[in-house]
Amino acid sequence: MLPPDWIEHRRPDGEVLGWMVADGDGFRVHDLLGRERSAGPLEWLDAEELLDDLGIGYLADRWTLRFADGSERPVRISEASPRGITVVADEFGMASAVGAELERFRLTFPAPAELRPER
Image (cartoon, rainbow, N blue to C red; front, side, top):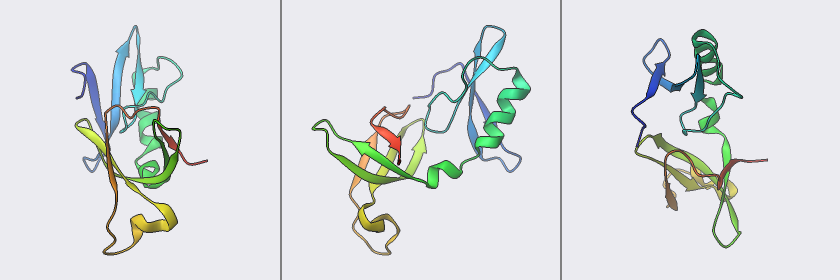
């Protein structure tokens, strides 16, 4: 669930890029996975620019999901919203195969530390 003090930032076509959260005299930036992306508080325009620069392309990248037993699986993000994040298993590029039966994993928002960009 989205915290009530998060301020939505959209690109000109209306697509949500992330959120800004007031912190003292500045704002911290959070991406669509709810992860903080600013090293510290930024001025409003700098926070908007950071979100514009981040865009949404990172959502299409491959990610790694670590399980409680220490095993890891390559995944792709299929849905990201404040209601939760859904990833699909992507061994051998299966997430792109038409008609493939994909194993799905539902994660919390903000994304847990177990979901990491693929190295």
